[in-house]
Image 1 (tube, rainbow, N blue to C red):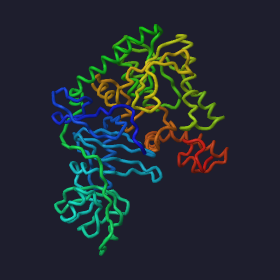
Image 2: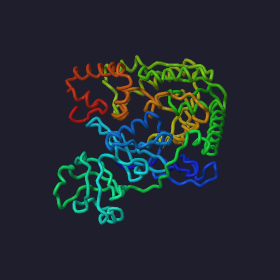
Image 3: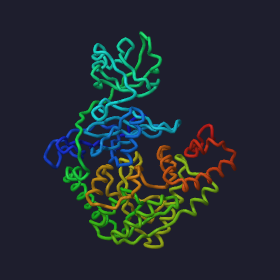
Length: 464
């Protein structure tokens, strides 16, 4: 899939502090260097659950984990039919993990830089010295005449490391044959090597506190600009103010900024009835921590009433946001304020629609609300460094491996995410599954419509 350019890629690395930096210079005074991530480049911290997932995937395949304890790592979601994440550490893209939805499993896709962190004990080949120049300099495939060893577990289609006689990594690629097929073979391709944009890799330990300190200047500048924007918008729109709070990181950062700019304001929470338990807990925690009232509106009844007529929402049939959020929010605003100014956690790096959107607007479905986005130009890493700096009570779901917070069965979620939510909250998912099964049976749809998550796309063949 083609890369998505949603804004400048700002990710840099400081080799003195060994942390990511969002500016050409670190707060320590050292110049930083770009990290060649795939657009949109909205990288985020790898929390312990993320690191555990990456290490499990690499260890199962190569016999060794990828990310050592004490090393900072980032994940960068890139365009893919389902989900693919680049893994960044030491200032380099070490490789990726990709979810194969049809097989229900993850696969590792290493880059040569990964060898700075792991020595493969499985799925590698060794080539003789004479083959090295053509592979390293010319990007040649590993051919049978140059093969010295192929680790016995290698199967056709596997990702493999290519090693020289001293067991140094010279390339990575995908096996063209099973290990058992190479005995006695004299010609033909054994591994198709892959070229990636190279990057410098310097493994060192560091902490997120180090990263916050290294980014002090840029985060301070972002905060000041956003606070100025909030005050300027509030001055132009003399209306009752609130923060549209979802329980997610972006709305939390927005809340902190609004508090600094205007003081305490209410939280406007649209409860769809489909939020995860951790989100409900976070809304209460945040309101309690900062002493803020919650104006809560429920869209649960409207959601299930519409479901009974229309079936489940889909990526190309998203009636859910309008029925379970926008229309209830419009009613709540009318009841509490008549009209209001809501600050929302919208960022341009999230989607083409949000990149193209205005920073201050009125939603046609919520005409009594002026909405404004103070963090429109922030990346996910800006947000996280700000929350770390402020020691803010972010939603625990992020530490459990989710990169976004919303309705647990959102059709726009990747199947990889839905699988994780199903494992985290089986009872919640069973309730949703029962509703899907009822619609499936009453409309003569096959079991695959549910099993393959085909409900997520309306009219998808063969489930028209």
